[in-house]
Image (cartoon, rainbow, N blue to C red):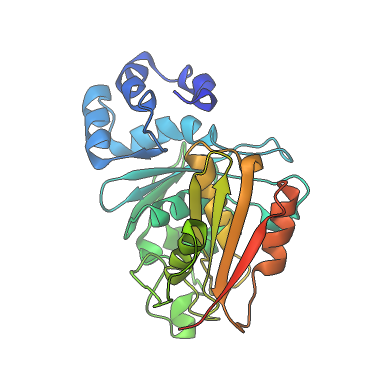
Length: 295
């Protein structure tokens, strides 16, 4: 079991601990519960899916990186496939507050990067802020996405964000988590190829500024993330943060990044270069390569 889960695990009921221990002690556990595992956990604990997800929130919150606020938020994105994906908020000392990641963004991005096509629900331990509500409004789940919080009945995103402004207002029909791929030529070493492939699957319907970031840690592991744009612009998630979400949830250390590659559309109206370089520098990495992409 990864050490970060130990304290939260000890707060769970004995029955849930017994059911969950083999899952967490699997060295291949990457903060994802398969549909089969979820089904087994509900059978072993007697909890329905909503109650189980709420009970697991302390484990998700254990993944938080909060050197600034010390305020941990956990979220679980529940895919229509039946798979569940942990997420947690992330902060980066030395970087601007705008570079932080919210727990809902983390869980949703974790699902997206893991191949999930659509979400049925998001369970979170605090009421989603306006930023996160707007971020979730970009999803192909739309206002029907169910939000579950402790002590409150499940409600839809439409309940939390009435009269919402979103992609349809800007005539966008292909939404976040829909299958979209740009035909960028793939070249270079493994790290560069990972960044290009991430950029090809990024979501940038408003600017066409497709971008991806790939990170390599000291043991040679590569983590790649994609840009996720938003109709309200500010809640857009940069590709570096997307990659950092994956690195963190798979048990890596954000201060162990040795190299990075940013791949982005050439001459695009939006560039991720300056923000990516600044945040990486705050994390102790000054080895950033840039690749310009054209169709």
